[in-house]
Image 1 (tube, rainbow, N blue to C red):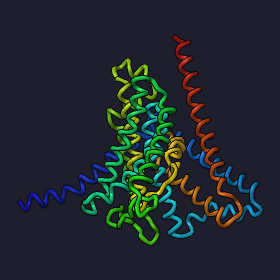
Image 2 (cartoon, one colour):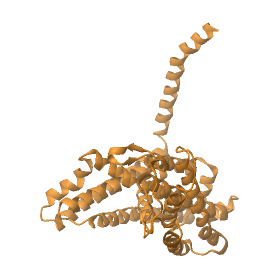
Image 3 (cartoon, rainbow, N blue to C red):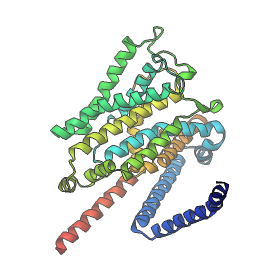
Image 4 (cartoon, rainbow, N blue to C red):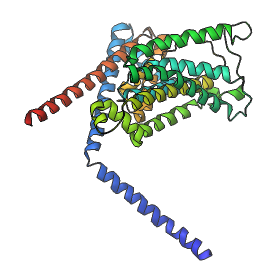
Amino acid sequence: MNDKIKTCFRQIPKKAAAFLQSRKDAFCAWTHTQSCKNFLFGALKTAIAFLIAILSSVVVICISSDSPWENISIFFLSPFQDAYSLSYVVTQAVPLIFTGTAVCIMTRCGQFNMFVEGAFYLGAFVSAWLAPALRLPFFLLPLVCMLVSALVSGAIGYLPAKLKAKLSVNEFVSSLMLNFIVLWVVLYLLHHVVVSDEIYKTPLLEENMKLPFLDYDNDLSSSILFALGIAVLGGIFLFKTKWGYRIRMTGDNPAFAEYVGIRTERPVVYSQVIGAGVAGFGGAAFFLGNYYRFDWEALPQYGFDGFVIAIMANNNPFLVPLASFFLAYLRVGALNMARIGDVPNDVIYIIQAIIIILFGATALLKRVKTAMNRQKKEDAC
C-alpha cells in the first residue's frame, strides 16, 4: 500500500507537466483560429474606443476649466490616491456589474427590456423588508434575501416578456411603464405598510443581517464577490449552455432559429425573466452590502447604466466587470474633480454619451458589413 502511495506521488509532477503542456498546445492552436483573430480585433476596437473616450474627456475638461491640468490630474489620479478611493471605485462598480450582466442576457436575445431598472430597485426593497422579518443564521440570511429578491423580480419581469412572446407587445414600452408601476407600489408600501419609527424608511438592519465587509475601515463590501460571480455565471450560461445558445441564436437570426427547431417564444421569455432576476439579485446584494435602511424615493438609474455597460462590453458578460470598473473609475474621478476642482460632475455624462456613440457606430458598421456580405453572396448565387 505504501509503495502505491509513493508511486502516485512520484507521478504527480509528470502528470502536472503533461497537463500544462497540453494546455499550452491548446492555447497555441487557438491563437491560429479565426475566433482568436475576432477576439483580438474586438479587444482592439474596445481599447481604441476607451482611448478616444479618455481623450474626449481631456478636451472637455480643457474647455470647461480655468486650470485644466490640475483638474485632469484630479480626474485621472484621485481614484488611486488612497485605499478609500479605490474601495469607492469597487463599490460603484458593483451595481453596474449586476445590471450590465442582466442587460447582456436580454439583449443577446434581441430584447430591449427596460425593467432592469425596476428589478434592481425592487430587489433592494424586498431584501430590506425581508431581512428583519426572518430568523435565520447570519450566514444564510443575506443569501436567502437575495434569492427571494431575484425570484420576486423575475416573476414581475415575466409580464412584459410574456406580452412580447404571445401578443407581440413591444417590450421596451411595456417594461418602461412597469418600472414606474413598481416605483409607486414600493413607495406606497414604504409610506403606509413598512414605515419604521414614523419615518418613511424600513427597519434598521443589524450587522448580522448584512453582507460582511471585506474591509470595514474603507466600506468595502463582499457584494463585489457576488457581482463577479454573477458575471462569470452569466458568461458561462450564454456561451456554454444549450439555453444560452438558443438565446443567442434567437437574437441573431430568429427565422433561422425557427427553421432549425428552436421555439423562439421560450428564449424570448426566459432571457427576460433571468435578466430581471439577476438585476433583482444585484439590487439586494448592493443594498445588503452598503445600506442599513431603505429610503430610496426614486429609481437609482443603475438599470439604465446597465445598457451603457452592455454596449461597452459588446454584450459579453465576461467583459462586463472590466467595463464596469472603467466607468466607475471615471465617475469617481469626475466626482472628486467636482468636489476639489472647478469642473462640474456633469462631464461624466458627456463621456458616457461619447462612449455610446463610439460603440454604437461600431455596431452599425458591423451590421452594414454583414448585410453587404450577405447581399454579395445572394448576387453570386
